Picture 1 (cartoon, rainbow, N blue to C red):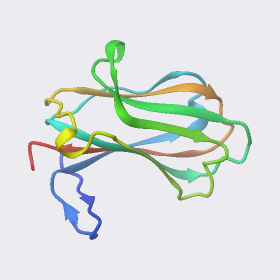
Picture 2: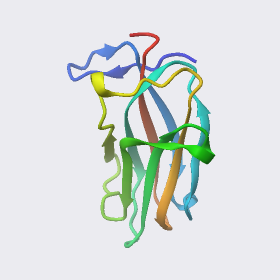
Picture 3: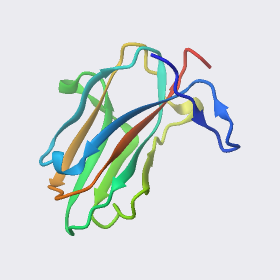
Picture 4: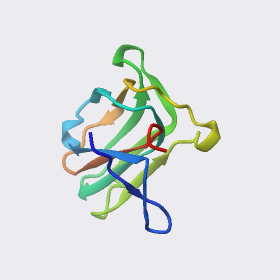
Length: 146
């Protein structure tokens, strides 16, 4: 799997950063369910954050979902601190908006997960969306490259 460099604050690509992109039509999250199941990361890593880049706006009110990033097998996955997104009708407009959930344990305090660790995205507390779509972006630091 090729590295997908992220951009640092000085707009220079930074080696060792990797982003997993996953498109999601929001009506597809009709109930509490797995959005991404048991994705095996092939390198040791730290979780830097979870983002959602909105491509199609949500126009119908009173819709919501909470999406959590976790590590480990689905049946016994552990939530990553700070990697929870609250997607709502109110915060999913305008198109192009990025909703962020940066990991709370970054740098020396961040957990380093071994190569082969599984990651998952799960939706909970869902009031089904009628429309809207975007891309989940899971930001990782490849600890084998840094």
